[in-house]
Image (tube, rainbow, N blue to C red; front, top):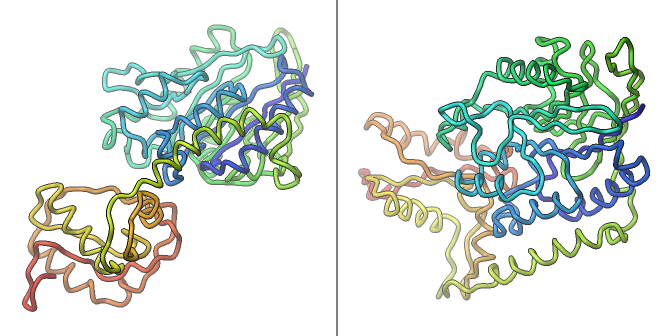
Length: 399
């Protein structure tokens, strides 16, 4: 018997590419037969740095994934760490497809909101247990949401034992921990997981990575690929084992048109949410009588942070905004365009000696001329510039 798994990861709200993914998924599922096919996503399908996703509160992505008939979804850091606790709870409970996460719980050990510890599905007479794993990122789940990050090995072993005791034949893990950690987990836990569908590291695996008896696959990023894993299952002495397996990545750039018939429903969902977002983005907030340069805007942000949080000192640095604002009408769109970096306001105590060090080092070219790269900076390569303060007076005036 054969089971086909179609999978995506780290789409990051690249909607035009996703339309091609969706059309391909629908076509391949119809070709292999829905009764023999699983469709899963390993996280970071959302991206709150993309206007349509942010302004829909993530519901655009929820609708798109529901329309393709997704069988299981494991949230990545963009869903779990960038959404508020309330929004995350609402989305998991509203979702028409299961959000699976086995490594996070509430303080009392129960599942949070609509999250599930596991999902059990049947395809081709085979019972499949699906688990989910998320990168703890230094216990961000507790710091951001007051939830508990469970030991990965203990929590997943417990779930596997429970599923096996109920007659589950095949264990599938949706992991948003990255390829290196997936390999490490499979190495340290031989035979625990049959298949790991990965995400987080944006790895393009064009062939199966095997660690012992565990199959590891991952489909790149930004909707460039849809992964297809075909498992040949063999029955031996009442046990179902994975025999020969075949794997490959479908490159969506090779799909000529995103407006294929299979994509009409997806396109309609996207256009509906996009129109709603555009009406908000076009809202005029105020009119500037003169240009507001980048440095002045950074200073203004420091003052606003100080006022908002009732702090003694406000601080801000260059990538807080990517550029200044021109005189004339300022719309919501303008603010969103210049504030795309993932900067979360924080309130903390700092000593006088530390403040003195910050003031001194803000003129150090090694710091001020350094460029910011990584997932937190958008666009990439912005210069840090001088750290700006509000409410702090130095010898030559306000810092």
